[in-house]
Each structure stands twice: as structure tokens, then as C-alpha cells.
Image (cartoon, rainbow, N blue to C red; front, side, top):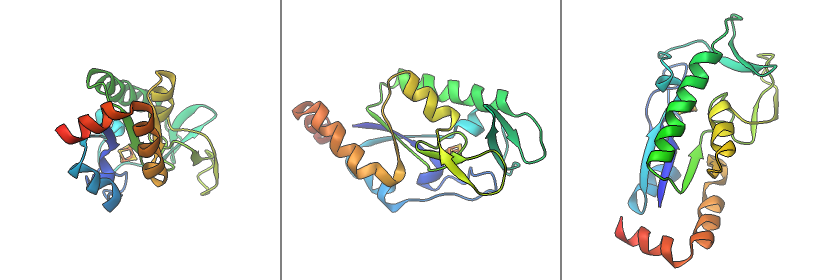
Length: 160
Ligand code: SF4
């Protein structure tokens, strides 16, 4: 399968604080799948390091109260286009990010409080019908996609 992944999960140091979210599970997927790492925040022109950001009443803001929504949405659109061009089968994304979060995000108060919701990139993928899974659900999502694709996906896995 062709799987788009949050670049920080493969060890790219693109997190706001200059770190990464390296995941052995995700890195191991490269043995059987084609992985496409993207970082929507860097794609949108943001730098490393950068201020932490959260979605505040629908607008992405940093912890200084500056509006960074344009950069987030620009980066999400660029990465969406890549997903469409590459005809990806699945996206596996980092948890809780205001860009990549699939199930939960911080509530916009910069107090560490989580709420149900998605980051702007994950939401954009969903709007375009592209399946996206939180990294904690990667194995289940892969199994689900395999079922959906049947032998076609199995064959593709063998070819990659
Ligand atoms: S935007 Fe996504 S890929 Fe980039 S650092 Fe944040 S979680 Fe990782």
C-alpha cells in the first residue's frame, strides 16, 4: 500500500520544539509499504522551532495569540494535493497535533486539555474521502484497508 505518514513519526525533527515522534511501528511499515512522509506545518512555511499552536474556536493560533491559521491551511492543502496526486491508500498521522491529530486535539486554552476533534490536515483528508488513522490505531487501520482492498492490496504489497 501507499501510506502517507506524519514525517515526525519517521524521525524527522519537524516538531514545534525541534524534536520528533519516532515510531518503530511506523518505521517498520517501510518493509512492506511505500511510505510518503509529509509535515503540513513545514509545508505551510512554518519554521523549526516554532511556538506551540492550538485551534481556538476554529482558528489556529499560537500561544502568544498570533493567528497562524493561513500557514496551517496552506500546508494542509499542499499535503492534500500530494495525497491526491500519489493516490495514497491510507494516512497514518501523529496524535493530538493541530495539523495531524485525527481523534483528539487540545482545546485551544493551552492548558493541556484534550477534546475530541481533528487537526486541519486530518480534517481536510476526511473531507476528501481519504482514510486517516491515528498512529495508535495504525495496525487496525491497515487491517481494515487490506480487507477493503482484498487481494489487490495484497498483490500491491508484494510488488513494493
Ligand atoms: S505537523 Fe504533523 S508531521 Fe509536522 S510535526 Fe506536527 S504532527 Fe508531525
